[in-house]
Length: 220
Image (cartoon, rainbow, N blue to C red; front, side):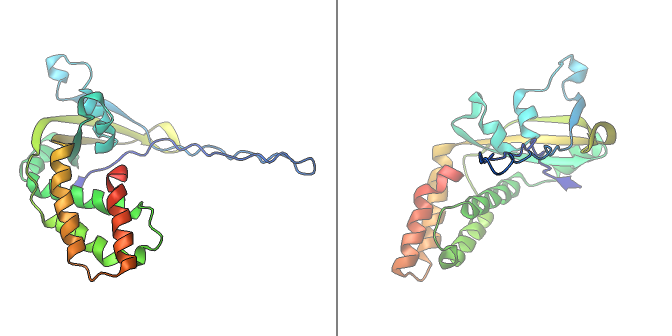
């Protein structure tokens, strides 16, 4: 059973044109397209609901897209996402998941991605600190998360190179968990501080850690 399939957005290539009398303008490459999908049916279909909630359509692209919605602007979001070939299968698999473990697993990946994008001169100096922090998040139990809603959808995917050509159908079960940003930040700050305190410190390493922690939530 696959979990958490994020859908990439269309990427447009940007081309710089150099205005030089002796050189012709650079030709723009063709845009790269990605697979498209449509929703065949969903939890509300039998009730006469035409479209699933906004958070469901955003969640197919990932939790950060949900956080961009007005209803969730002051919250962090975790989506427990189960994919399969049958509705019964995904619902059973979702029922057997440990939501607390899934929340910690997702947050550890998000912390790892944030570290990867951090603007630090020499990340080698704080590699063990970052690894320790990621593991601590993965092992932690976070309080304050609540299940806000759940939904299921049946998606039909099309070929990446021809969005009119059928590829496959799948069912997705999506459970939405939310937490106030301030509540999660307090818990993450404690973990980051603990990871730093366990690190053999040098002035250079302390400076690098300080830089990461100061801008951490900008990329989170």
